[in-house]
Image (cartoon, rainbow over all chains, first blue to last red):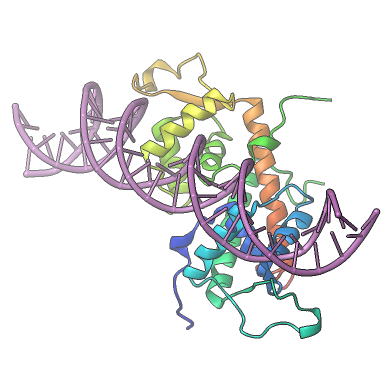
Length: 121
Length: 121
DNA sequence: CTACATTATATCGTCGCACGACGTATTGTC
DNA sequence: GACAATACGTCGTGCGACGATATAATGTAG
């Protein structure tokens, strides 16, 4: 069976960190692009500051959860200033583990009637 | 319509804080009882230290999310040492808002294929 | 009866992290 | 030519989690 690093010690992720991983989950992006994706995805509710973002990126790279792809995008639509990042397999594992952790908490919240049930119609 | 305080500025809750509110969502408990409930509910994965717990309790009381009930439990099964806490209506609102926030993130994670879909059978 | 574990509450110091402020530079628009 | 937007980054502050530590009552095993 696939035995990589254990994601557990990294949980729970901070909300900001999870937003960044989530943002990269469907394709590589550059820093500023992550900022904009998170903002639009959350309807402007989550506005990561650059201080938050670049600190997180540094840590994620150090921990091997994201990496910089070697090949630049098609040279015509490239921007020299941009630095791209993508999830590593381990980064994906951590993000998935965090999502599963949240799912469990949600089901408890549901059991305690904090949320409408799935079929309470 | 019911117009109380807005829970939004308090979100996202820290995982530890949410665990405490969640613990009180189905009835009042005392500090040590919260510790044990969280531990058993999470299968020992979340072990709040007393430093974490009593700091959180202090803040939650200050912010009006929890309160101490005036009446002690039936005097035979009481323990003088215990201090009980219960959710205020506002505390319930905040916990619910946090649960809803998590639900949204989970649905995004699902959309990006981080979790098995509901009907992927 | 005397240790030791458990129950129970509380404080303190450290460290990690989010965040706003600031800084620099390029590109695009009015 | 000015200003907004794009894009990267650092630094200081402050809050919060957590382990360590303290205190004390109760319950249990030897």
